[in-house]
Image (cartoon, rainbow, N blue to C red; front, side, top):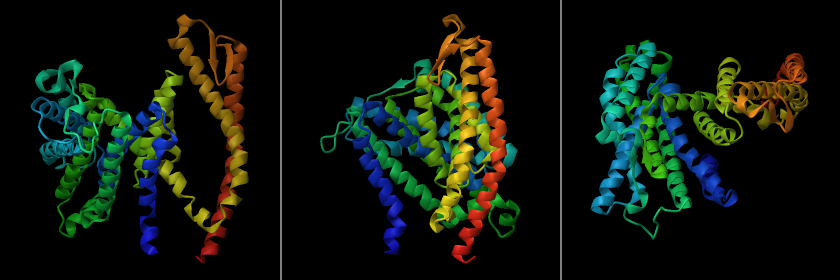
Length: 417
């Protein structure tokens, strides 16, 4: 029974990955879930540096991107020579490429920690990004490297042309990488990464080389980032110079932090959420990146534990059945919060329309409302939503805090603490 409970989340996760394409069967949904798959691996690999070992990197896309380029070149070599290599093993090529470059760059960058390491990672990232436009033979210039995933050895009649087959390939690698990275956190090496993060002086005092611990964590992280890059190359069938730039490095930082760096499940939540927002929001607004930026700032200021922290802080209340005590206060706070949210959305969309889409005229549509962006009445309504929503929301904070305290005390009482 204990074994079943222990492995229940893993079995449930595997079952969900198998069933999801049958629930969300449209081509767009399967593509989105494929993107989420290698985004999860990429975010978890980054959290091995930031969350596990305390290393803030601004160049993690280097290993993701180079893993993708090596995988694309391998696909082209296999296709040209008709080598009997099946597609499912090629992400391992990306992983080994990421590991190789992590060994090369990591031996230098991990000699320092803290701000110095962050600046070195930024410099390496910019160096590789500059090389991507100079070394055209390897990076393909601005057009990148194109490939075909169907030119490999077919196993069991799978050509990996249909998107559903690619999804299951990504899902299998995603599950395997999640399990491997979770196992790494439970090893003595994973515990030493935590020790180096929390108290490097004490780790040195008991005989461990903090530089070597950082180096091993860095190389392991580079391997999994390369696997994610290889899966991305297989999915897109093209790799461009943009994948090694500052954009993907910043995006993986956002995914990991918004999800929650202190929890293993945090980067998974962040990758799923950010991928969904990137695809869905971009269809509705040109200012979607601004929403992501505002969300990141709010997380840093008010919820440093990320979405995972917000969810897991309720575990004790759910386990003891005291969560119901919080629901009325949450419902009360939700009303002004929604008004404030509506005001923020209207402010952003109206400003974006006037600044970016002025040629389309003042008439616009947002939140199922059509109005004139230049109308004083519209701006007064936006100001009222912002002011009233914030002030009313602020008044509910003591109520929520009091309800939280009472529910926590009752939960501890039921647990006998």
